[in-house]
Image (tube, rainbow, N blue to C red; front, side, top):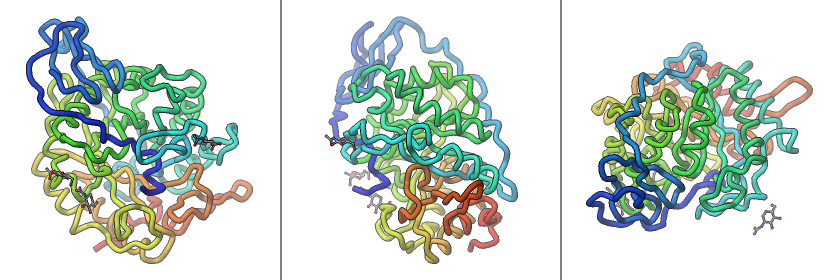
Length: 396
Ligand SMILES: *[C@@H]1O[C@H](CO)[C@@H](O)[C@H](O)[C@H]1NC(C)=O
Ligand SMILES: *[C@@H]1O[C@H](CO)[C@@H](O)[C@H](O)[C@H]1NC(C)=O
Ligand SMILES: *[C@@H]1O[C@H](CO)[C@@H](O)[C@H](O)[C@H]1NC(C)=O
C-alpha cells in the first residue's frame, strides 16, 4: 500500500469467533485461525509454539512474577521532557509486501559488511551529533526464519540482524526489536535479549484489517506472556492496535479499550506501552512529501486525554514527512505537543534512515563525506533533539 508499509504483516487471516471452555493438557489454546478455547485446564499453561499454534503445556503461570520493570539506562534527551527521540533504521524489512508475504532475498541489511548503507555509522552520528537516544530496527520474521513458516530462527540470518542490534546497543541508545510476527520469536528472541535492559520489544508492526479486536488483544496478551516468561521481565513492550497502528483511530476503532486488558503475568501493566504511528501527509500514508497537519486536534490531544484517564502511555514509533517547509512547520508543532504531554507520550521515532538512499522523499538518511555527516532538512530542523523542537518553543 505504501513504501513505508512494505513490511506490514496482514492479519486478514480469520481470527474467528467464540472463545469458551478450557483446553486440556497438550491441547491447542491459540494461534492464527484458532477459534477454540484460549485458556488451559489447571496445571498447564498456554505456550506459543508458533504464530499458528499455542499449546497447553504442564506448568503453572502464576510462578512467573515480572518484578519491577526498569527504565532503559539511556541518557535523557537534553532540553526535552520526552524520554525518547529516534530514527527507524530500515533495510532488514525490505522485500516484504503489505499482504504479509516477504521475499527473503529482498532483505538488505543496512550494514556495510553486507554491502548496505552504514547503518552503524548513521546511529553513531545520530546519537553523538544529534542527541538521539533510540533506534527502531525493523525486520521481517520471514528473514529470521529464512522463509520457513513457523520455523526456527535461522542462525546465519540471526547473526546478521544481531549485528545491527549490537551496533545499536553500542551507541548507548535504546533499541526497538521490531519483528513482524508475534508468537514464535517471543520465546527465542526475548530469551536472547533478556539481559539487555536497553532492548524494547515491538510485538508486531502495523496490524490492519483485524476482524475481531478482542481476539487480537488475546494474541497480544499471548505475546506479552511469552516475552515475560522467556525471562525478559524488565523491558518495555510495545502493544500495537488495528488500522496500521493509527494514533488517530486507536481509541475510536476499539484498539485502545481492547488492549487495556493486556497484562503482565503478575497482573500489572508496568512497561506495557501502546505503539502508535502517525504521518503528516493528506492521507496518513507516509508516502507524500508535503505535510498538511500537525495531527494535534485529530489525534494527539484526544489520545493524550484518553491515556491520562486510563493511566497509560504511548510511544509514536513511526512518523515522518518530506524535506520541505510544510513538514518542518507541522512536524515541529507535533513534537512540541508531544513534549508538552510527556506524561503520556514517551517519544517518537522518525521514518526512516538505514538503507533508504539519500534523497528518498521521507528519507532521514544523512549524507556522508569523509567523517562528516550532513542531516536532511527535517532531521536538522525538527526531528533531531538538538533542533530544539522538543523544548516546546516552536510549537503552538
Ligand atoms: C526476490 O528478490 C530477488 C532479489 O531482489 C529477485 O531477484 C527475485 O526475483 C524475487 N523473487 C520473487 C518471487 O519476487
Ligand atoms: C484508519 O486511520 C486513518 C487515519 O489515521 C483514518 O482516516 C481511517 O478512517 C481509519 N480506518 C479505520 C477503518 O478506522
Ligand atoms: C473498526 O474499523 C473496522 C473497519 O472499518 C470496522 O469494521 C469496525 O467495526 C471498527 N470497530 C470499531 C470498534 O469501531
